[in-house]
Length: 222
Ligand code: C5P
Image 1 (cartoon, rainbow, N blue to C red):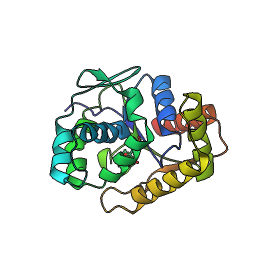
Image 2: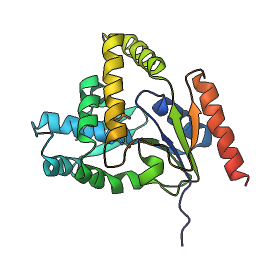
Image 3: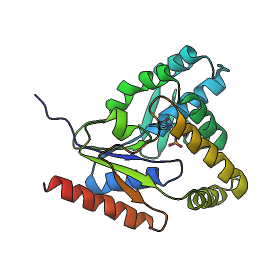
Image 4: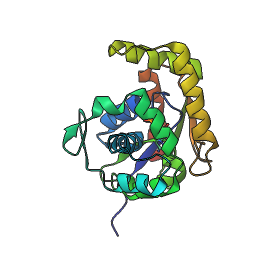
């Protein structure tokens, strides 16, 4: 039997820095990375473009199934078109969080996510990486940061990109999105029972990455 590639899962609320941290941990280990939120965002973008009703659960699941996606080091292509910037828009993220409770959609994305698990290893970030998609991962991280620290980070990021942003609106959206992710019936945002919680509110990106690499060294040395 072929051994399964090791996986480090990084779950946590929106804008907790999961994406940046996941990419840096993956780069340090020479591993692959899965940004699972991007798959929900791509589905959201696809249904926006096709005018599919978000409430039509089967149609949304079909849209996810038929996504033609290519991840590349600088971003992601959908149907051959660069959509990296577009899927980062707040309206796409909000729609992604509205459709995310749909069980048919989550089932449609499961195999696609698991296909990323290839040697030498995978760092997967999202909401249910450690609880559902890679339940057997040898290292699970639950990355948190207080909501005002997250809103400030997101605001700064948007302004740096030349996109106008309002801190109060971001805070409100973030609280609503957290509540939807935490309270949904299917694959809610929750720390796996065997996850290590890392609070990045007062940590730099480098310190957060290092704390995860240290945890991995400890797991590997067992
Ligand atoms: O992580 P990101 O903000 O890009 O994810 C967008 C939305 O997709 C989240 O608010 C969440 O509702 C959903 N999502 C999810 N499960 C994942 C990743 C993202 O439900 N594994």
